Length: 458
Ligand code: PFF
Image (cartoon, rainbow, N blue to C red; front, side):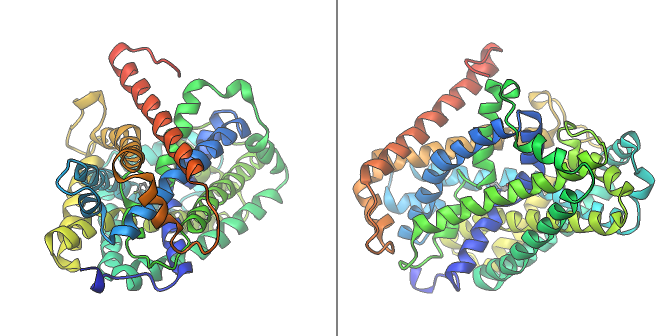
């Protein structure tokens, strides 16, 4: 099977595709508001520590497993540990992909709608008026057909790219969209910094305020480090499976982490400089993007252009992530079930879109699917995946290497393609142990909180 397996066309293509998966709504929407609310640079320091200790270990682990087996998660675990239950880590990954993409596609649809709103001058009516902007946003997401229509378009585009395969779809579009994201964000960041009062946004983001850094912010930073680097569900196993033995996996992983972090910070700069310059509320939380920014763009000279640029780059970031999620599901049906790429992508892309429609409608658009865990179905999907499924998947991957596959075999594959670079087996082992332990504690803390109402920390 591996003889005919699709492969990346170049190292650059692979790095752009993997960082395209990592850079998404998590970087441009979640990170800035999390950092803004939880102590600025104090949060960022913790976040960086999580990324470079836990995140790095798991990205490298996923790349190594994928490249070694040349298979997507289920087949990969089955090959390395035949006839054991480890393949369930792979199934957990496919299930997580299903869960995440269902609501991610809905947010992708909201972003498309905001591109249209911006182009049609819709933000000027919201200038400096967060209440009106809040009503517009809530009115939209709680309606029935509008969000479904845009979600359908977003998912259609995701399916379109994945049908075209690894090189002709994922790699080609990542190579176009990733540089554009960086350029557009760079332009917006410079624009923000040159606005009068914009620099106050930089100090808000980069001055450490340790008094705002609570224990729960630390838990948040760890959970987010999984989401933002697309870890714990086999995305990076799948992408790694299209690599040849010449690639230096450690080097590629560092590139992906660097780009992911740098783009999150650039997004923070672009957003907070503009928000501060125009005196809007920086601690708006999740509403920052869809509520505060339209009011700000509405006030800015040339706001239609800036606003449109922002939502287009956010759309591209969301799309390069969504394709990587769908690829996990598609690759499973190709590798394990022998389906054609086209059949797998269309059937499961469509099914995920239908589940996503229920997420969208759970915000009030006609079907009332609240009740389970006491939150809308949309939030349930987000909660289950970010708080449990991804961290558990990542932790089990680390444990798998330490306990089942063996660090020796793991190191052999990791060192392939690294030339003479010397890398300490013990160091890698310690990092994996730290990753597994920290995540296990956080998951335990979470479960303990759900059961007793009190957290050990946070
Ligand atoms: N990393 C993406 C983001 O930051 O938006 C989200 C994501 C993509 C999570 C792919 C998980 C995944 F497998």
